[in-house]
Length: 327
Image 1 (cartoon, rainbow, N blue to C red):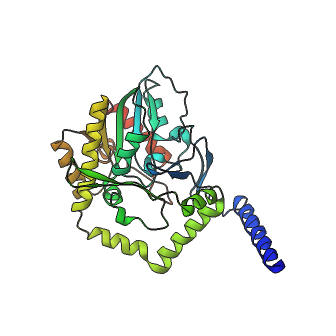
Image 2: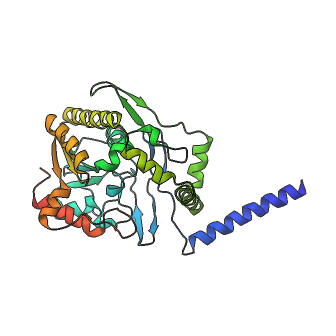
Image 3: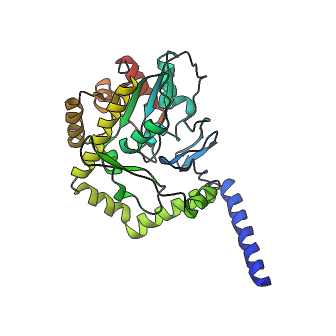
C-alpha cells in the first residue's frame, strides 16, 4: 500500500511539474476554450480569456458573460443588433480582438449597430440552426449574417465524420426540407466531465495535439479521410445543408429578422450547387471570394494555417460596408 501511494504521489507531482513546464515554456498551446453544452454539445467558456498559440501567432482571446467572442466596444441596448454566425474563421481566436469580423464591422459602420459574434469552431449550418434556436435573444436583432465555406461545411454536417476524440456536437437528420429529427450530442458522462476538468489545463490541449499528430503522421488517417470525402456521394450531406438553411430562413422570418449569407469557399462546383439552392429559396447571398478578387485582394490566411489573417478580416469588413452588403 505504501508503494502504491508513493507511486500515486510521484505521478501527481510529475503531472503538476509538466503542466508548469507547458505554461512557461515555448511548447505552450494555451487552454481549451470550450466546455460541454447540453444543446450544442460544446460552447465557449463564459467570462474567459486565454492565449491561442501556433508557430505564426500568439494571440490573446476573450469571451463575454454569454460565451460570445468579446466586443471591443460597449454594447448599446438602444441600437439594433446584427449577428454573425460561422465556424472557426469567424470565431477567429488567432486574430487580435479589435480586428475580428464583428469588431471590424462595428468600426466600418461607425457604431451604427451592435455586431455580435456567434462564431464557433467545428460548426456548420446544422449546429448553427440549434444555436439560433437556443442561444439567441432576438428582441433587438435586425439582421443575421452567416458565413459559409462550403468545401468544409458540406462535410461537417455528417455525424459519421466525428470520432471519439472530438468534442460532442448536435446533428440533424433531414428527410426533406420540412421534416427532420435532432441527433442530440453525447450525454455529459464521466468522460465529458473529466474532459472539462482537464480542459482547464494546458496538458489537455497538448494531449489533443499529440493524438492528432500521431494519427496524421503514423496512421495517415487525415489524408485517407480527405481522399474518401472527395469521392463521396454528397446527396445526404446536401440534404442536411439545404434543410438547415431552409429552416434558418423560416425561423428568422418568424422572428422578423433579415437573413444574409456570405460565401467564401473556393470550390466552384460546390458553390454553384449552393447558390442554385439559395436562388431557388430567394435567400440573399453574396460571394465574398469573388467580390474580393474584383476588388484586388485575396482572402489570405496565416502562414501556419488557412484561417483569415487580421488584414483579411479588416479587408472583408471594409468590402461589406463599401458594397452595402448588410442592409
